[in-house]
Every structure is written in structure tokens, then in C-alpha cells.
Length: 165
Length: 218
Image (spheres, rainbow over the protein chains, first blue to last red):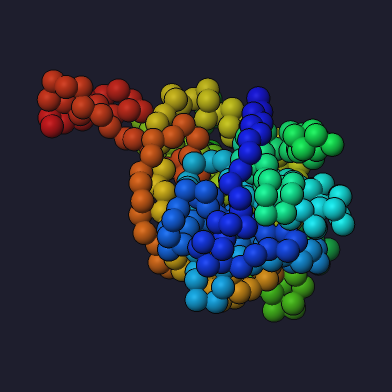
């Protein structure tokens, strides 16, 4: 059974500015605890982030990096058998120019996960969050998905519904 | 018939024979002798993989990687049945986990192993029917430095993807520097060998969690 939780999210741009990190213009991945830390040295990514970045680059999708050269954000490896994705951030301007952006991003992750779960029978549990900037530097929505891989395809509609589109 | 065709005939014949022995009722000596036969065929498979790598034939190298792991999965399951009959329960559990891991690698390695999804399901069914439910430990740690198993570079700076085959090898991330944060108790771990093996009964005895046998005084 899948669970979807929609909530308003912190002002991402303000937070990135406070932490002296770069402002994403298009698509980016956010650390899992970005809304909790006051010191950028405590930021953590989920361990899937590097591989997912590679998958996006492979498909020619341009990503923004929030970290600058002197900061390396470590990755949290949790060895329970579920796949935990990075937080996908989609900027307001990028979404307005690419309304299919969520579909493409989730589709790429979903395709990768079909390979990832090959040879593993039974439930294929996935956790993925998307943060959408509704109004630049003002309004943000976070959608958390937790459930079977097969349910990910519904995420685009859920995100659009959550954004009252 | 050329050498490779002879090898493929032997592969088909021995895998069929092995599948017919993957039952607890089969004779243990037949099972043990087949485990040795599988060793020989795995060696031959590795030689064909080396040949493919020398020839820079990536498709063949990945195919041989799949064959190697299918054979190792079958061998591990067969060993599990032998160990169960010989009352070596912990070893039998490890054999089952190995078989599950090998068949996953085979399926990742080459599309010709896609039909082994049914076999992966069979192994999960054995886990549920033959062994009791278990409790596992799962470490959580911060990865600070990791390299790619294919090119030895920092995993962040290469183009290889974890779980994909490259010239007869599956890409893995090798963690070189990490900080342990926690150890959790989970029902579905990534590593099923990280299980709780024994527990105190509170009366001075340690109890084996697979057999429920008393092991020793605390």
C-alpha cells in the first residue's frame, strides 16, 4: 500500500542563502535534512543521490548543484531493503517552461528502479520526495511518496493535484 | 561442434540435472557429487569470460557473468539442502542468502537471465517456508569517500552506475571512509546474513534463533 503526504515546505531559496549554498535555476537535488539544519556541515544526502545524478546526466538532463567546491555533503547509507531517493527540487521558472519536468524526472527514476529491483521478488519499496517551487522565493510544496515502485507513475498527477492545477 | 558449443551443451545438461536435485528428498551423495561437478563448470565458465574480456566482447563477457552466477546460485541452493540434512542450519541459511544474491547478479548481468526471475521467487518461497521469520541488524552510516569497483575512481567522478554490468563485472560502490551512525533492527535488510543469531532466555542460557537449541550458559 502506498502513502502520499503533501505539505507546505520551507522557503528553499532563503534556506540555501542562509547556508551559503548555490541557488538552483532548474532541477536540483536537496539534502534530506535541509529543513532541519542551521549549519551546512550537518547536511546529508541519501545515498542514492550520486547514482541518480549520473542517470540524469546520461539522459542529457541538466542539473544544478547546490554545493560549491569547498563543500562535500556526505551520503547516508541505510541498509534496510528499500530504495530512498533524493529530494527532487523543481524551480518555478523551470516548471513553467517545462511542464513535463516532473513526469520526465519521475519517469527516469522509475526506469532506473526497474533495473535496480531486478532479481528481487516481492515488494519493491520506494521513498521519493519532490519539492516544487510554486512561487519563486515564496511558496513551496513537498510531496512525499512511500510505497511500491509501481505506484510512482501516479506521482505526477498527485503533484499536479497538490498544486491545484 | 566447436568448443563453445560443447561448453553450452554441458551447461544445459548440468543445470537441468541440478534443478532435478533441488529437493530435500534427493539422495545426499548425488547432491554432493553434483556440487563438485558445478565447481568444474564454474571454472570453465570463468575461462570463457576471460576469453571474452581478452577479445573485448562485452556482450559475451556479461553473458558469461550471468552463467557464472546462475551456476553459483544453483550450487548454493544445492549446498543448502545438503546442510539442512546434515543439521547445519546456520550454514544452510547463508547458502540460501548466497543463492539469492547470485541470482540477482545473474539477472543484472545479462538479459538472457531475465527468465531467472521465477527462480528468484522460488528462493524467496524457500526462505518463507523452510526457515523461521528472523530479525536483522542494519547499520546506518555516512559515506565520506567511496570508489567505483570498475575504474577505481571516486564514484562521484566516473560514469559507471551501480548494478550495471561492464565487461563481465557488476559495478559496485566500495566505501573507503565512513562514519557509523546507528544500528537498527529491521525486518527486510539489504544483507540477510546480518541476522540475530542467538538470544538469552533470561535463565542463564543462550538460545540459537534458528534451532531454538540451548547453546551454552551466558
